[in-house]
Length: 403
Ligand code: PMP
Image (cartoon, rainbow, N blue to C red; front, side):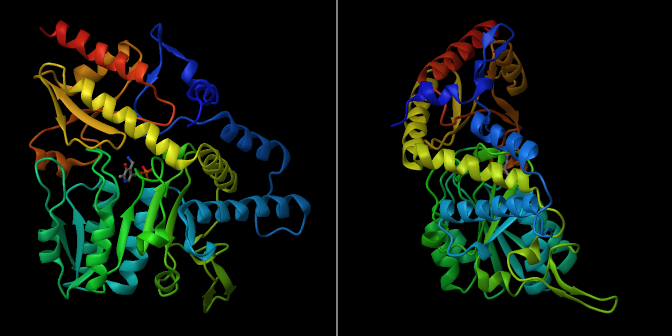
């Protein structure tokens, strides 16, 4: 196990006071705070290395290129991909999924084809598929779920047909913390020769992930949720799919040769990376992943599971508090009596406690649960039991105010 106090000292923002209270940051599913090492990597690169990558013969350009490409290798190792050709840098999970929806859609989706998503999806894993369906005249199907937030695998098997072209499913729900049985979901899809995209935005920060062992065909995650900078993310794709997909955007870097009559495209992964990449962010993302590897993802996972279990146990004792789903995966959504989630979140903020309120970019899931929104506390590797205690006390204080 790592030393939590030492870890917390790496995150300067955690020392802030908010309205005279120590900051208790429990909005990690939205974005995580950054360790000094990550910020320093960015500052150091801008101060000492900065030059555009890939195109320069000069020293700095080569050094920046080396850092950028070493970052791709760090990502490859972190998620256990087979080759760096399978690692595409994007702006984040949302762009990764949009890239896939456009490119996979161009190559493989036709009128009448079906795409399966689940009830638990973030809007980022719904809307791009809806837009594709509108473009191509294809159909979106939805895996139903139980009241406690578990997907119905029997119903899922029924949905698969010879018209199904792709299954898109989140690894961990950003609202309920449900860890989906993605291994089963992938195996069942493959029995029907259907590829699978896993949205890993809420799994990569919290648990070891091995895309090769999972055997998923595509996998997306965001840098900013994994202690890295904003504006960078990853789309993993198996080479045999990526090879057969057309570019997403045209421009520099994604070409081999250009004439006014015809353009030939670059090899993987560059075919999908038009324009100057955010090479400072990719280097900082790799620094964040190195930071996690040094702590050990198993340790991070254990710490957060223990903390979430502790929080579930303490929260469930608060009178009138209802928890949606009951999964120990770093995310807890709840409501207290008939206190509006926005009021509760606002009053907790006055105590220095940052939680998220609302629909969490999952309106169809809210509709399924028959609610408008929840309060969501989400944990990271630096959160402590003392912070959970403060959350519990804060909720009790607000509940008392509301009688
Ligand atoms: N999917 C899930 C499960 C998420 O939690 C999020 C972020 N809340 C996203 C996708 C979108 O990530 P980003 O905004 O970084 O593109």
